[in-house]
Structures are given as C-alpha cells and as structure tokens.
Length: 308
Image (cartoon, rainbow, N blue to C red; front, side, top):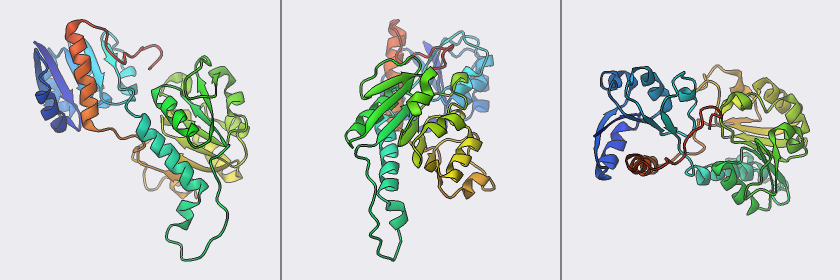
C-alpha cells in the first residue's frame, strides 16, 4: 500500500476525482498547506501537488520515492538539495490555453481593439495585421510547439530557440541558444516560454532586445527569470518595443506601489496565461501512478541537472 500526500490549494477538489479513479493499493491524505502535512509525511512514499508546498516537506519524507508536480514550473523542488527520488512534471496540457493568450494579445494589439474599447469617437486608423510577420518563440517544448503551429494558421513565420537548434514541428526554423541574437534579429514578435533554470537567467537583455525589429511586441508567458526588467523598461521607453505583456513576475502578486504599473505600454496579467482544469492534472497523476505501481517508466520525468 503506497502512502500518498496530496498538498495543494486544490486538495479538496483533487480528492473526489482521485477517489473515483479507483487507483489500487493507495492510501491518500489531503492537505491544503504544508504545515498541516508535516505530521503525516515521515512514511509518505508519494507526494502530489504544488511544488512550493511539497518542497517544504522534502527534508521530512524518509521513505519518499516519487513526486508528481501539479505545476509546469518545478523550480522550488529543484532548489532543494534532495534529489534521491523520481520527479515528474506536467506537460502537453498548456499549449491550447497559451496559444489563446499569445494570439489574443497579438490580435488585440495589432487590430487596435484595446484602444477602441469604450471610445466614443470614430477612428478610421488602419489596423495592423499578423499576416506575413515574424514571431520568435524562446522554448520549443510542447507548449512552444503548439503555439507555433497555431501562429502559422494566422500567416506568421515561426522561428524557435532551443538548447541545440534541433528541428521541431511547427517552426520554420530553430536556432541554438548560442545564436540567440541571430534568432532575435528583425522579429516582429517575441514570445518567451522558457523554464526557470540558471541557463535562462536574463536571456532577454539589452542586446537581444536591440536585435528585434523596432516597434516589436514581447509576450512572456514562461518564467520571470528570463527577462532583464530594467532592459525591458528601457526598450519600452525608447520605442524599440511597442508593447510588452508580462504574465509572470519575480514577485507575485506585484505590489500596487511597483513602478512597473506606471509603464504605459506594458500590460501585466496575473499569472493566468495557461490555466488548466483540475481534472486534467489529476489524469496526469493517475496515468503516472498506474505506471509507477506496474514498474513502467513514468511520463514527463524531470532531469535534475537540466532543470526540465
């Protein structure tokens, strides 16, 4: 009988879904907060839930064998020194939602939708278009590939950036990380969907922003660490960037007093780019649990060294 601790703000929503899944040989306990789970974690074999909460339990789980994250981002677990267990992430779920976020913002900005909202004056200024523009996506995993494929449907040329320049379906061209300035050259739109690792810190800096086409649009739906915020604000002020959309920030929620709120051509969203139904997260866990008890390889296994 495997002892499972579910630790998440969604624990009460996970419980009926897991109980109805009929998973064999499982003893599950549900907690919203890590502090409440401490007394039960000593002999826990499996953890499932939010990485920031699970990371607090790692030093106390003496029989831990496997951790299933309920987030795409697993940095709180990677920051721990403990690595003597299997860690699996959540993939192949966020592409549709992220593509809606990216294309929704690009269409709103190019077609002037936001400026027209609530206006009581006739405006016959010609809108822009996505047709024939160039979009660069930093990160060509399952999310980035899905976004690229959808962008092609709107007539966009797609360029990808990954670790080694390998070809990925959905991209017209992919370049390796060492050629990131060539990747950025004359892009109309830049989308960042990278994981939070030491290798992705401040990749979007002054030099990379200068390589974009003047008046480009930037959207970050990945992780906050890849953006050099002072460089971003400077590019917005100079007009090198026409607009930027940040869904992730180093400090969340962003305090009302933060000067970023005062940047006119910067839109901030509340880490809502790619919401995923709770049921889909539970399905990922259930599939992996069945594989776990059968001794089969787990899906979406994380490499601790690479960070993804």
